[in-house]
Structures are given as C-alpha cells and as structure tokens.
Length: 244
Image (tube, rainbow, N blue to C red; front, side, top):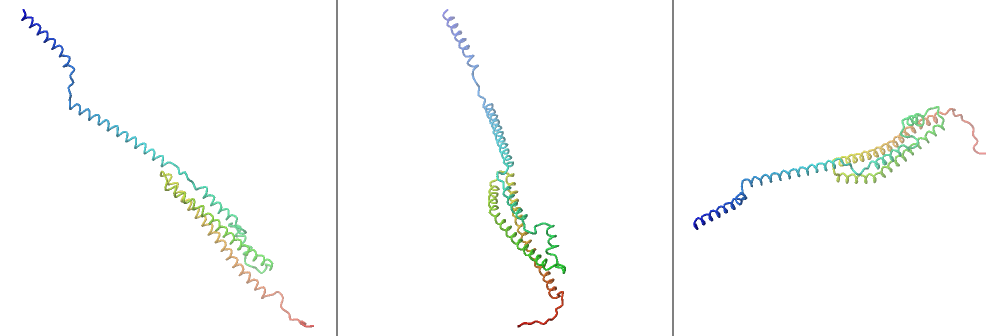
C-alpha cells in the first residue's frame, strides 16, 4: 500500500513538473545572427538614403540661393552722375557764342562776313566784316577754353564713379551684378569719350575760325591794295605855297 502511494505521489510530482516547465519553454527567444545582420544592413541602407536626400535638399537650396544672387541687381548706379556730366558739356556747347554749331549759321556767316571782298563793298563794310571776324575768332577761343575747363571739372566726378564701380564689380554677388557693373564702366568710358569729343570740336572750331579770319583778311588786303593803287581820280599837280 505504501509502495503504491509512493508511486502515485512520484507520478503526480512528475506531471506537475512537466506542466510547470511547458510554458517556460514556450517563452524562450532564439537569437538568429543572420537575421540580425540583415536587419542592421537594412537599417544602415535606409539611413544612407535619408542622408542622401538631406544632401540633395541642401544642394537644391544652395542652387536656389545662387540663382537669387545671380538675379540680384547692383545696388550702386552711376547713371545720374554720368548724365549730369554729359548735360553740362552739352549745355556748354549749345552756348557757343556768335557762330554756333549750326549749319545754317555757318553757311550764312561764310556768305557774308567771310565772303570774298568785292569792288562794290564800301570801306566801312570791309572794316565791319574784319571786326566781326576778329570777334568771332576771339569768342571761339573763349568757348574752347570754357569747354576744356568743364571737362577738367568732370575728371574728379569720373574718378569717384570709377572707384565706386570697380569696388562694386569686385564685390558683385552674382552674374547680374557683375554684368551691370561692367555696363556702367562702359557708360563711364562713353561719357569720357563724349567730353573728349566736345574738347576736340571746340578746339577745332576755334582753329577753323582763326584760319577763316586769316584767309578773309588776305583777300580783303588784296582788295584794299587794289583800291589804293588804282584811285578813282588821276593825280593832277598843282602849285603849293609852303612859306608865307
């Protein structure tokens, strides 16, 4: 009896141990190195893709910034100063005294004041024309010197504008700013060429009027000499009492 009881007790304990061990064996986790390595590799690839996307977005943002710089206008403009310099020179040329830079006035002067001296012209007319020619030459030299003084006065303005434009060109943020700075430098050169043209024109005008004066004076001198050598009345000797 005792033997049967011990056998039954041992069986119950065995069953209890088996039942208690069954859930524990179901909760065990098995580590798979291959599966873990694959998961790590997949995560690394995903992270690399994210990094690539971030770099691509950064490059696109930098490209947009560069495009904005290339489209930015130059903050400095010398157009107003250049226009004022040209206007001063042009206004001075328009104030030319007596014979101006006008085709009508030039043709009229050379058909009257500078016309060849004729035998029908009176002595008073010849003297008046010679006086007018001298005044024209004198006025033209004054105009030439005034033009030269104006151009010299523009040199300081040109120097300031040149320095500012070179500085703006060197500090240009984009292609548009550099191009605009270059265009303004070309405009400055055009203004300087305009000043040079004005000086040459004024100086040439003075020289031409002086040459015309000399040519007209020579022609008038020949006419006056002819009149002196060929008087209208023949000389008739007369008796003159010199001492009382």
